[in-house]
Image (cartoon, rainbow, N blue to C red; front, side, top):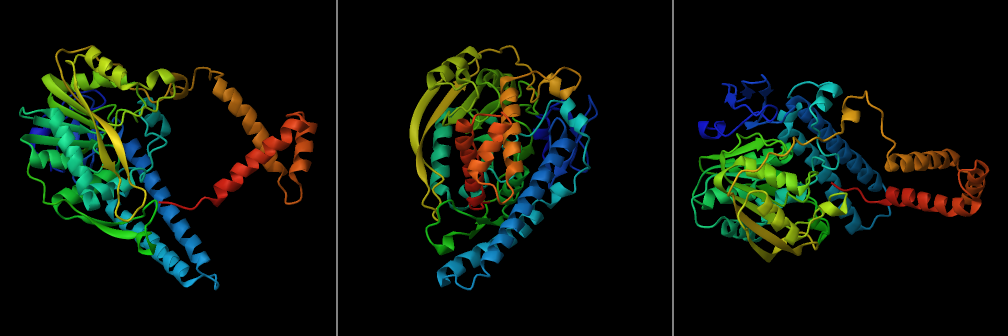
Length: 456
């Protein structure tokens, strides 16, 4: 159960009023009356917790169904009497691991499946909060094993760089935004003079693994390396546990980095590891958001690759632009360094690499105007009463969907690519010269997608 010291830092992500804690370990907002549930002792401080947890339940269901589908496909392959012995050994290992992994995930995430009922879509969208569509439950699954099984070298390097960017001053309280499976937050709390550390992430799998690991209880899950080194490395059961139980003052919170559930101006140190460049928000807004969380003289440690993925080129900032934005956002001139460190070097995989990362440490000098609330969806989509804009992307999608739908309708097991191209031309969807290569390209992608190996 979070101690009173962390409760004093927490605020409602919807109305920003300080929260209070109930005897059942849940939290509530005294302003809007919203109640925040707890998953195995980890408070869920989302702006719309019922809707967000419902989405995570759906993603858990998808992950379990995919494991079952992949296990069934492997079982079918194992019926082939002509399999070589070593191939049969490898497929048998994977088949058993997929089935066992599903049971382990279902047990670990059982608290998620028990929380709340499915809210209406309108309730969800009205608050402009959504989970990113590209973030599945297991998107960062390999990081769990790096954090709590085999990544001692990588973890130590990250700690060294972040601690160096922090400097020699007392940290007080530390907030790690986008903490993932929690190892960096744990190491900072264990090895630095920190009173309170809060590790925030929005993924319940990562948070619940972290909760088990730092308690000393641990959990066992299968690792499925990208490039296995041997047959036995295709599926490796790992014990995920911290080197020692975490000391008092360490807290895990489920929440959204873009709507951080913390009292403004209450944090001594904000750490953002490998997160600023994957957010769907412009870095200028996020820098102002971090400023608003920090006390006067507070410290921001930004750590990672700065490989911005914004849709517009203007938002894919260079290091020089990042440093200028930090200073324009109320911070003193930052300390900055670049270091090459190992990244995701599993002993069971050939796929590890070295990454050139940037460590930025900046001290808050003055407050800046607060950025607008992050809005995941535009008003015309949320309210449903305004005209849907005829965006260029929509126009292109409408045409391609019409063409691809027509092509798929022509597949009957008898027509050739040439036959289909003639029919496309007859319908004046494109010329015969354009139709045949377009159909071939489309069907090639469909075929290649069907041949891709399953993965966890």
